[in-house]
Image (cartoon, rainbow, N blue to C red; front, side, top):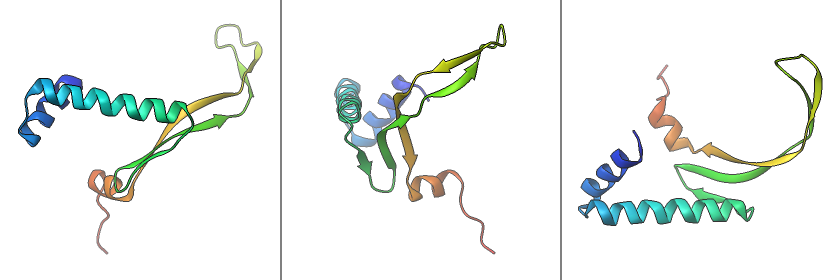
Length: 95
């Protein structure tokens, strides 16, 4: 599903116009992005958590030449799915 398909589904589910659904989706994504960029976690109970995590510096290898190189430390966004989301994607089997 791409963004336009998501907007169509959101508009149908909320009984609003595609333009209003698009503005809502854009606003939501902007809020999540700016919050995580400010190192604030965004937790949506049942769905998951968006957060910024630090990745340590490490050694890598140039795939073309094979020479070792240093990869600098950085901060990256991470999404951790919630229990309800995980269960919807891969239901637990009953024993």
